Structure formats: structure tokens, C-alpha cells
Amino acid sequence: AVLSAAIACLLGTAAYADELVSLKTRPGATQAMLLWEPRQSIPETVILLIPGGPGNIGLGSKDGRPEAEVPYLFSNQRKVLLQKGFAVAVIDAPSDQANMTQEYRTSPNHAVDLEAVMREIRRRFPKARLVVMAHSRGTVSAGYILQNLTDHVSSAILFSGLYQASPSNAPTALAGPGLSRVNWASHEVPLLLVHHVRDSCLV
Image (tube, rainbow, N blue to C red; front, side):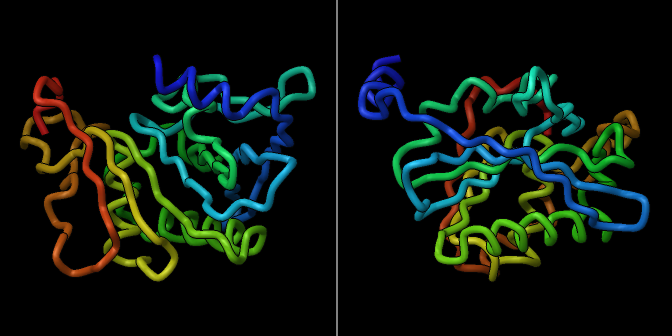
């Protein structure tokens, strides 16, 4: 709370130009991305937020203002994340996926979506560093980026990552390899893992 208050004081009453972006990534599918972008500065760093769970946070417009219908881990952390010199991009599930399972998050289609998002970020902010920040099942998406798209990112932060494969009796919507197949030594991207000893997820 003290940190949040201090950052809020530093930020003052900054104005923001949020933007809802819709990318046509694949035939019949679009990928929504919400940009939290400060008006006053050209960002040096862009944080790409990948929500956990099904990943479907319902990005849309309400009373002319872009927002997510479904709360996610980072929803109330704007003042902490959007500091001077930073922009933030939050991705939704693509239009053809109500639930981004682990199977989907490790699929070629998801790779196409992620690459399109990162290309758009690079187009808008060509000189900015890109930091991937993911939570829970979203870390499976981040794991794919770390294994295959490291040229696009400067660093990554994973919260409550799914480090183990799901047990054989796990429901289909939750089952998958998690991050168990990621070769952490195969890349040089700085990585911060944030995890609590009382995390209730078995994987």
C-alpha cells in the first residue's frame, strides 16, 4: 500500500490515452489488445500483460471508454505498472477462443496471435524495450514466447507459473504441460519468477 501510494504521488494526475486495438491475426479471428498509454511521454518500456485462467477478459468499450469486463490479476495495478516512461498492453483471448486452454496456448494459432501483438507493439514503439508479464495459465503463453520468440522481448516476469505438467486426471480445460518443457538455460532473457509458498495450484 505504501509503495502504491508513493507511486501515485509521483504520477500525480496524469492523463491517459487508452486505446482498444483489434488485430486481424488469422482467417475469421481477431486479437484484442488494450493499450494503457500515457499522453505525456514516449515510452522506453512496454509491458505486455498476459492474464491467467481462460484469458478471456472481455475487452470492449463502455461509455466510450475501453475496459475489461472480467477482473484479472493486473486490473487494479495501473498506478504501479504505468509509471513514467512505460506503456502497458493487455491481451484478451482471440475472438475464436472462449477459453484459452494450455493446448491452445502452445498451438501454432496462438503463436500467430502473439507474433501479431508483438509486431504491433514494435510498430507503435520501435525503440521501446518489451517486457512480458504473465500470471498463472498465462505463463504457458509466456513460456512459448521465451522458447521461440526471444528476439522480440527484453525480459519476462512470471507470477504463479504452472511449472509442472497437469496430472493425468485433470479436466481438459486445465490439462497440459505447463512450463515443464521450457529449457530455461536455452536463452539469455532476464527472467523473474514470483511465486508464493502457499500457492494452492498443484502444478
